[in-house]
Image 1 (cartoon, rainbow, N blue to C red):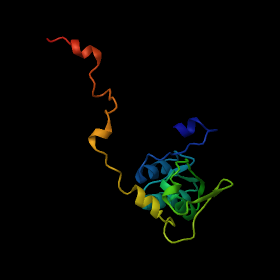
Image 2: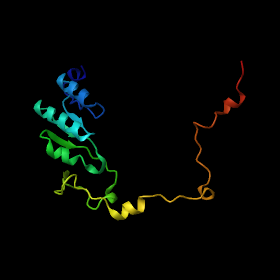
Image 3: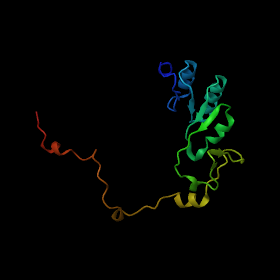
Image 4: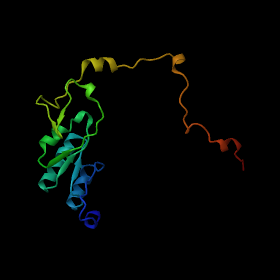
Length: 154
């Protein structure tokens, strides 16, 4: 109904439907663009179904851009969602992005190699003694509201 009511607006499915929900949405003609991300098997199955139905696909944001490989493997992908989260320090060679395009590495698998120095440094946080912790920040969910101290009893 939404797609029919907005003929000049492209409807993107977003990413919150599972594979069966996306399939039903496409079968009902309810989306102009299909957003996929999540488990690799679901992304590939839904992405290929979209291709069979000539529905453009966008690959949703993925940690360290591992979704670029799904984008390269699916025929209808026109966009890859990217939100700069600066996890580049976690890997030796982050995905290269230039002129609005992301370039998949030619190494096997997802092509990412964890940075050993970062892994070693961040593997175990430093545990401080209680005396160095200071007071906990206030939590309004745990602090009774001012009027609760004067509550009435029935």
